[in-house]
Image 1 (cartoon, rainbow, N blue to C red):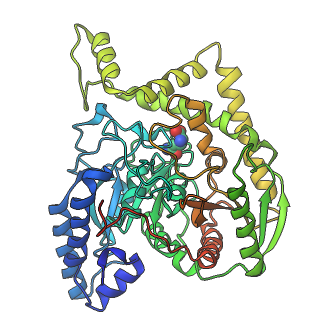
Image 2: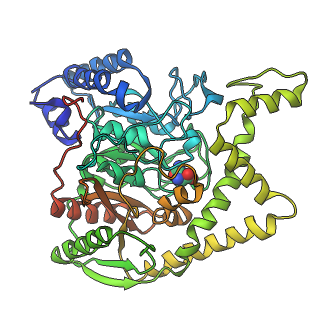
Image 3: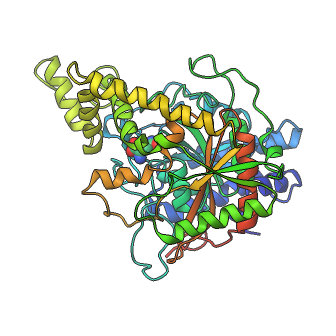
Length: 495
Ligand code: GLN
């Protein structure tokens, strides 16, 4: 049996049956990381000794009956989650030697449930990007290859590109991510994975390096819908240390996956038909609707008229919040410091050397839209449009139970493509950003391949707090799609 090929649910069953130990399971993944990470660059920091020590702890817990639901399961942790005693960089030079003295709530929840951490995964700097090309620690290679052009190095998407590449390549069984405008769903789609962004307030942001606080959502990647449900189950829950965390019971997500869609009404938003969207993306979308219809759902055409302003609004609100959040990186109390003759020069030198180009671009945009003369014209107006986007969702969810759309307008692209045109890069998020603006749960599920053999995802969007329906719909798509093709680069196959 190849231990790296198992799903989380299968591995957990195998551990319970004593088919293998947690140490054996984790060792197989540590070996996969050693073989593949030098090429893929999916992890910024690997912690094999820590992982094996955690695995030994999981074996002890399995032995005495105290094992948690994720005991012994090896995961990748996006390097935006603070991990006590383990370097946390946010993909930035400005935090290149930052070792947090505390653990984020989400990672603490996973540890409570017995999960094993393999290390910290690569990401776009401060989670700003859609390709992982902006990381100060270098780009990540997508383990998938174009059938006709296996030499081309493709991006895994971003910003959680290292998490997605690690799970796709069978180095990790699952991973954490954060999604501010699409950073879980877009890389999940480009790497052939399930990726869930829950409702805003469901997973604590405490200890997660902030990008845009009103849009940041911790969430999970896995290779199956069921596995992503198991991870979210552990990560979610009220946290008094995050003032936007909401005190509601976390439902049984794994059970929700088996509910089916009979009797559900699924909306098809007509605005999600991007100009120049490839016919194969449109075809897969129709195929997804057919699968849901065949499983007993009713398909309804709906309209979300303010979707067309989603991207423009996002690229005002997100940089505005980022410019404020990133003001704390001044070289004084923690992180990178460049000397200067006085305090102002110390700030200037530190921030000039510590931040990369994309981060500087966002700080400039954010400072501009918040400045006295432009605040009303940009920031305030964007906030009003955000409310209209939210109202669109409220209205359609009075009529339907969930929405189905493509996750991205295209499959994985090559490293270097779209790099000289920030707006072309921003267009990656055209289908994912509205769910962040509204805070509603959304997930990407692998549904098929494009003409070049690359994965494409479909997105399920649900009502606030109703991740259960999202999982139920996604499970029906996963079952119907029977997505079984494996990426070219994976554990056991290194070229
Ligand atoms: N690509 C988007 C951006 O660059 C979203 C990133 C994210 O979700 N963290 O802002």
